[in-house]
Amino acid sequence: MEEIIYTIVRIEEEDFGCEGRPDGAVPEVSVYLKSENKDSKIVVMEDSVMYTRQLDVGSKVIIGSDGSLYHPDCVMAPVDMEKDDNSARLQNEWMEHYMDAVDELDETL
Image (cartoon, rainbow, N blue to C red):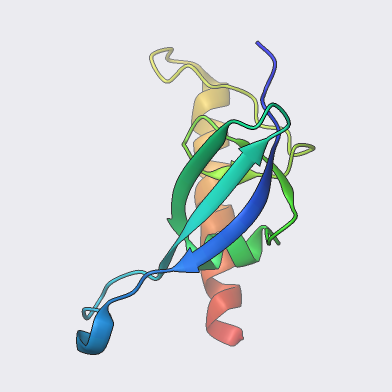
């Protein structure tokens, strides 16, 4: 199945009004997408993930199997978690290390 490539047309931050963001809430944004055939979608993602992946208005993206946005050239091999194989475990470990590194990077900025 061919992946649909979307263009980010608008990004809106959450609006908590005068109460402000609740303690411990992760900042998220609503990302408005449009495909070449004019299909529209809205994806909600963590703001920090958008920043880390360098996604902004005008960026071309695909929707990954996890429901979040990626650059079209990002290679994401599907993983069958039902299988008891080593590749799924290794991919999960890699992703955990990657996310730890992203968190550390965010703390230093």
